[in-house]
Image 1 (tube, one colour):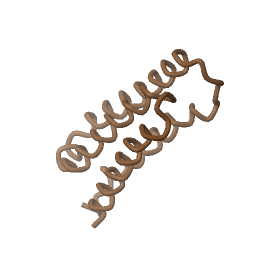
Image 2 (tube, helix red, strand yellow; image 1 turned 30 degrees about the vertical axis):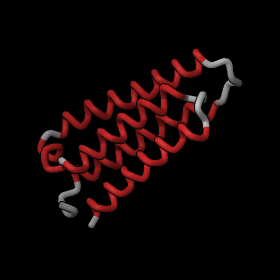
Image 3 (tube, rainbow, N blue to C red; image 1 turned 30 degrees about the horizontal axis):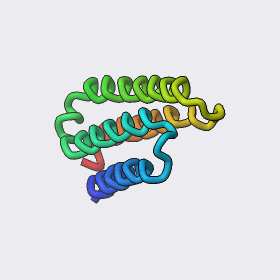
Image 4 (tube, rainbow, N blue to C red; image 1 turned 45 degrees about the horizontal axis):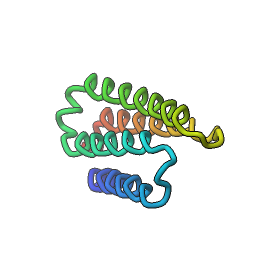
Length: 113
C-alpha cells in the first residue's frame, strides 16, 4: 500500500511539473525540464525499489547528481533570464534534498518492505 502511495505521489508531481509548462512558459524553463527528468527517474527508482535497497550507493549518487543539476539549472535559468531576482527559487534544491532524504530513509526502513 505504501508503494502505491509513493508511486502515486511521483506521478502527481510529474503531472504538475508538466502542467507548469502551460502556465509559465519562460520562467525557470531549464529547471522544470531537469525536475521532470529526475521525477521520472525517481518513479523508476520506486518501481525498482528492491534493486536500490541492495545498492544504496547508487541511490546516493543519483540523489547528489539530481541536487547539483537542479542547482546548476536554477543558476543557468537566472543568468539567462532578464526577470526580477526571486529569492524563493533557491528553496527548490532544498525541497529536492528533503525528498531525496525521505526516499533514502524509506530504503532503510525494513518494516515497510
